[in-house]
Image 1 (tube, one colour):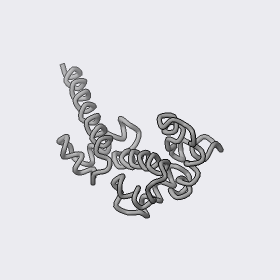
Image 2 (tube, helix red, strand yellow):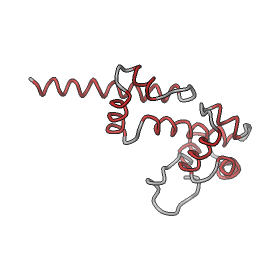
Image 3 (cartoon, one colour):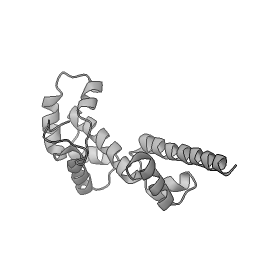
Image 4 (cartoon, one colour):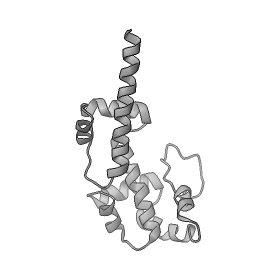
Length: 149
């Protein structure tokens, strides 16, 4: 009987974590923090962070920043917004933090990415350009490869 209730609890927790992940995906440009996300699913911030990391391999904040950087990459590829405009459009409040995080995930600063991405993805459909230029964390990168992949 106990194992069934443990299994049910695990499924309930996973459903709550999916709601958090879905909310981040939907509201990435809004001011989100772990405490607000945790309140939304009736968990403590610490418990949410531990469970989210166990389920998805990264903290909620890291996941949020990855979504923001992915969206920033798409906006920078368009080329019609400045780096500062892109920073605020994706929900970051500090240009310095945005630029640092962007450089960590993508490997180049946003201004360099903007210049290089316009050339590298010229003529590609947007859906393919998004796949080719998806950010890869430094720990996931496997050796030297294209700068934008």
